Every structure is written in C-alpha cells, then in structure tokens.
Length: 623
Image (cartoon, rainbow, N blue to C red):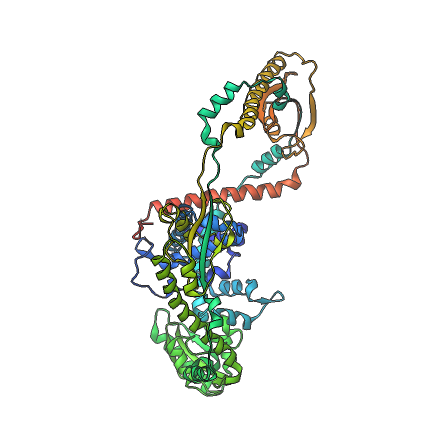
C-alpha cells in the first residue's frame, strides 16, 4: 500500500495537484506549527487541536472571498446568520479534512524532500520578477509576513506532504479510454426530430372568467396580494472623521510624541549573513563533530561560500554560498540572532546550536541603526495625534448622544443639538430596498424592533463600526396590507385565464400525442422539424432538446413520441432519426479529463469520509 501511494504521487494527475501550492495558504496558518494557547479549540482530531483562532482566520478569508465575489449583494447574504453559520462549518470541515490527511501522511512516513520544496518555491509566481525567481523578493515577502525562512519552508513541507498523499489517492483513479469514447459518442450524437409547440396563450381568447371566480380566488388567496411594508427613518450619526476638524494639535505635542517614541522612527541594525547548517539527526555528537570539522577548515582559510555549497544541509541557501540575506532582530532563532549580532563584518561564529541544528554564521555586511529626522515624520505624527484625540472626543460625544437620545426618546432634534450634528432622514423603503449607507444588519434589527417601530422611541446607539455610531427612529411606517379586490381584479383574471389556458394546451397536446402514437398525421397544425439537433442547441426550447435525447431510437419506422411541458405551454416531440457521432478523437482528451476530475472528486470525498469515520473528531465549542 505504501509503495503504491509513493508511486502514485509521481503520476500526471498527482504532479498537477502538487503544482498547486499557493503562497496565500502557506502564509496564512503558521501559528498552528509554532505552539498552542489556552483557548477552547474549534475541533479536536485524534487528539490534535484545531484552534478557534485558526478557524476564525480561515473563516474571515472565506468571507473576504465571498464579499469580492458578490460585491454589494454580500451585505444581504451576510445578514443571514444561518447561512454564515453554514459557511463557518464548511470551513471547519475543510480544516478537519486537512488535519486527517496530514495525520495519515505522517503514519505512512511520507515526506517531501528539500529539493522538492526548493523547486516549489522557485515555481511560485509570487516570488518571481518577469517570470524568474528572485531571492530578494522571496526573503522580503516571507519576512514581511513575520516568519523565518526555516519556518516557511517547514510549513510548506507539511502542506506539500499532505498534497502528495491526496495526489496519490486521486492519482490511483483512472477512466478507461472506452468510457471516454462512449461518453464522447453520446455527447456528439445528433438527432432529427419533429415537434408541435402548443402555446398556452393561444387559448386565452376563448376563456371567459366570471366575477364569482375572481371573488372566490381573492377570498382564498388574499395573502398573495399584500403590499410591501414601507419604512422611512430619521437618524443622527457620529463619525470619528467628522470630529477631526474640532481637534488641534500643537507643534510642541508633535515634538514630545517624537521624542517619547523615538524607537518607532528608528530602523533596526541589520546583518547580512551566510550560514552552514548541519542538522542533528539521530546522533547529536556526530553532527557536532561534523560542524566542528567544517569550522576548523574555515579557520584554516578555506572559502566559506564553497564549503556552504558543498556541505550545508540547507541546500537552498547553500547554492548561494549559504547566503540568508539581511536579517533584523526578532526574525531568526534567538541563539542564531544573538550570535549573528555579536559579530563584526567578515567574522565567523563558533558553533551555534538552534532548533534546526548546528550553524556556522558569517556576517558579510552590516548596517547600523538609522533614525528618521523629525522633519520627515512630523506630518505623520500630527495626523496620528489628531486621529487619536478625535477618537477620544468621539467616545465622549458618543456618550452624550446615548444619554440625550435616551432621555428625550420622542425625537432626535435634542440629541443632534447636543452633539452638534443634524437630523437626517430617508424616503420610504422596503426591506429589500434599504438605502446602501444604512444597510447594516445591526441597524435594521433596531429599526424593525418593537421599541422603535411600535413604541416610536429612539433606538439605542448602534455601532456600525468602531468609528461610526448611529441612532435611528421611525419617520413613517406603512404596514403591509391586503390590496382591495378592485385593485387586483385584472391581475386575478389574467392568472385564472393563464391557468385554464395551460390546462387546455395540455389537453390538446394529449390529443395530438394520441394521434401520433396511433400513426395518424395531424391536420391544420404546424409541425416543426429540426435535423442534426445537438445537446447544446440554443434554437430549440431546452425542454424539447432534453426530451429528444431521452427518447428511444426509432425501430422499423416506428417513431418514439413524448409530451413535454415548456415555458410557453406544451409540446409533443417525435424522434425521427439518430445520427451516430464520427471523428470524436479531438473531443476525447477533454472528455477524459472531465471524467477524471469527476471521479477524483468522488474519490476524495469518499477518502475523507473514511478517514473521519475511523477517527475521533470532537467539537468542544459546539460547532
């Protein structure tokens, strides 16, 4: 089994899956590899916790993706708590699936080698400039995300190992060429048909609807004729941005802020370093002796870069003479960092032991700490101070807004005067046409609450964002009500006519079908013919196309007939001839690929289900 899995990971499908290694995924969840917290986990998979923080992070990523996909519509979608809960659950199930796959890969001893990781990094477009891998860009992006290079590579190893297992699982599936050929032949088959379309609207003129029929329908179905509830609001809003004009920051305050936070305007001292790494493996003494032997050769004058390329277990940096580029405090392992920053330019450390093994470190260049001049950052400091004071003022004014709008619940004028704002209002709107600037779930919940809607008092202060609060009250409310019969009479007449017309069309279609089934032709009716009909035809009603390809092939001149409901009424369809497809070789490859994807998806789902059934998965947070 293990050998089959390993062999399977080398197949075409497997390699295509292994090729999809996305930087955004790799940089998203490193915390799970570095430690744990005391929080209640979202799930526990065979004793391994999936943190609530990781679930929240992945959920927010999915939420952002959906927001980008749906745009303004997302506000309405996200207001459905049940829907968003289902999204969160699906995200958690994906995390559980990843953990199950990772655990299985570990049990089977699967591991991705350094060369494969290096190639994956080289192939990532995020690390390329004009299609070519750029080491400076790679180091910059990884460090900008707050991670050490070694951490990123180890996390990538875990992800690629997981991908390797799944590639082997789905790579063991196959679709026979004969299956693909049969599918292609079916899809490219053509059919000659004849059909009669019977439009329901053609029967409308012969239908008379009595007043009593209209009245009876209205009484039984008056709920269909309700008007939409209408609401208009008055509101007072408070924004931090609106308070900036009231804030003044002195030059002295800007200078004090600069002096007190001088460290914020200083760039850290940096070291450009190269290293030779000897991994400890199973025998620490052997690793230490090997590292010492290399150090002795460096001390004796041998070229550090050449030794790194030849002997370092970090083959990725070794190809560049051990170069790790510029490092800053807080980026590398503490032991590595302490040794590196104790060296001068051109100096080589002694043996340095870290969690990765034994290092020899050489400083190839260094930069001293640099302080930005006050004049260069004064404008930024002033803006930050203004925003900070505006936020402090915001909370004071927000309390005034809350107090006055509560103490004077019958209007918003007093609250507006108290905070120096204006009362704004809206025109009437429905629940589906809420003005965009007020279309927030929290606001609508308050606006339609009994206190605001029925008792006609001001709402509590509603937090739209941390910097944007609002109070609303009802300006005008028009409840939903049943429209009078006189207003909907013609609507009911048309509906009843259409209803009866559909039945008459169906009856007529059944008569025609019986005649065709008996072998008789139908007089005074337009019979349409379509030769060479394909499954993707757009010039024939889709219901007719579907019926045509579900009918049995004619035998001894006996046509197969069917009755079908269409969007405009009824139709009877007769299959006259089936033309087999020829020369489907061009379609065979994409058909096989599509069938393979479908089969792989089925296999993946079955594999995850089997892993989950054989595992202990719990949801401590009640997911």
